[in-house]
Length: 124
Image 1 (cartoon, helix red, strand yellow):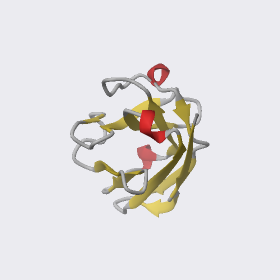
Image 2: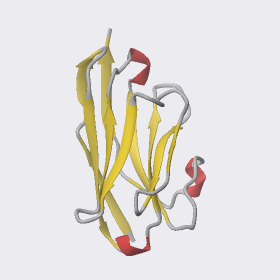
Image 3: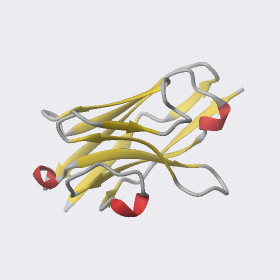
Image 4: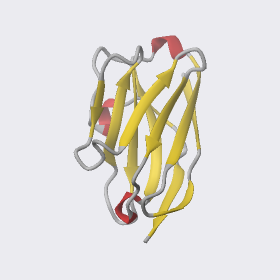
């Protein structure tokens, strides 16, 4: 089992920045990839970014490419999502996810463990 705890969400004005953190505990050695997803009210959960355990491979949704950066600190078993130039359409609950596998993935069904989510609200 892997436990994931997100933090760092909040309210920010458009154009501002936030950094989300996701601390993993438990059988983290078995995790290959970690990712961030988000879900806005009335919408399906969507992929934001993913990173391999060693940080060598990353993937981003087109909507956040160039604004968001995913990174990992394996000494702390933590993954981060630096979000810059935030827009009102980035408002959502952001979820951290982890998967046991050989490749990173963009489908939520590919991830085995999920955090409880952290709210990000961007005001215009």
